[in-house]
Length: 165
Image 1 (cartoon, rainbow, N blue to C red):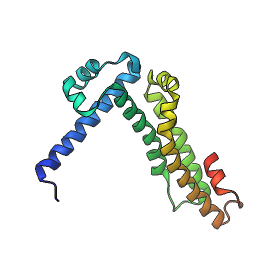
Image 2 (cartoon, helix red, strand yellow):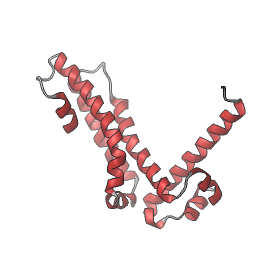
Image 3 (cartoon, rainbow, N blue to C red):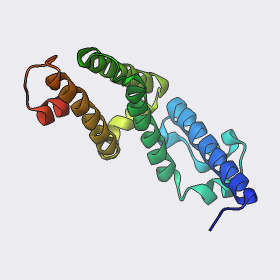
Image 4 (cartoon, one colour):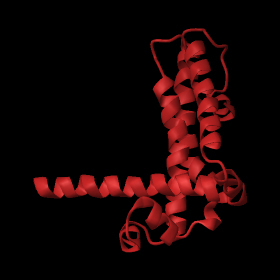
């Protein structure tokens, strides 16, 4: 079954609206903290009606989770951008690790007051991180395996080393 051109346009608009809401929420959370932002505040800041917000999200907690998910995914995406198989494994590993640290710093800096909320709800952050951590571990395993194969790295327990990294 194919999707009509009108449905594609509506779907893109819908996704754009959803992203605008999340971006606005992240900005408000960073400025005021999660507990000090209401659906009315978010609707006004996003230039949307509260009903529009509720058509995309059930509640503020769901929006907050989505903001956290996107921030954590941004860290992995930054690392992935630096992953370059044409580099020597040692250089690739260094670039990916530096990219990870830079991305974490950017997320923390960008989110102002939201930092405190992250630490108050560390379990939510940890649950969200698990999926991304596993992807990052797989990436590090690939780099380490390539390094062991071409003798850039000494033989090692790749699974454990990737997890530690």
